[in-house]
Each structure stands twice: as structure tokens, then as C-alpha cells.
Length: 137
Image (tube, rainbow, N blue to C red; front, side):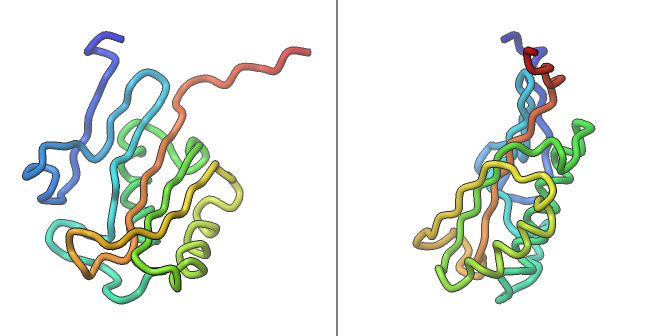
């Protein structure tokens, strides 16, 4: 893979600059979106509300793949990291609202916490931007 085949996009989250990472990276036929929370710039949306945080985080992740001309239908894998098991249903409801018709592969994990303790949810998204092959007849 040549360097021309890799493209990166940034968002407004200060950790990207501080830690040296991109919000999303397109490499070949995949677009990978880094752990995304409900922060937009320095503002955390949905503080205390796991459903709202999940919606904002997934919306930000979808905006990142949108930079490559992709939408929810291109998502093939999601990962959800929660700081509390009690939030599974709320986060699952947000996921279903955005991806219920797409049905990507998905992983949901409960973790000990995040850098900012107000964060309840972090998500990752992988999207496919290639041309699907027709199944052999």
C-alpha cells in the first residue's frame, strides 16, 4: 500500500493534537474511526446520559466517514465501550436507531473508565468503501 492510498481527517477534539492521532483514516477499501466520545471541541454533550452520549459519539463517527463520501450503510463494524453495565440498554437503543437497518458486526464492552470521568461511552466505527463483489452464481 502506498502513502497515496492512506488519507487522514481530523476533528475538533483537542486530544487528537495532544496525543498525535487522526479521527479517521482511510486505507485501501476501509475507513477506520478512532475512539469517539460525545465531546465536540471542549464541550461534552449529554453529560450523565449514556443514550445521548452514544448518539453524539456515533453521529461524530458518521461525520468522519462522511468526509470520505460514506454513510451508515457503509459501516461494517461498530465497537461500543461503556463505563457502566447499567447503560447497555440505553447505548444499544442509540445503536439500533442509527444502524438497525444496516446491521453491522458489533462489539460492546464494559471498561473501567475513560480519561475524563464524565464520559460514559466511546465508540469506534469501521466502514467499507470498496465496490461489493457479486456473489458467484
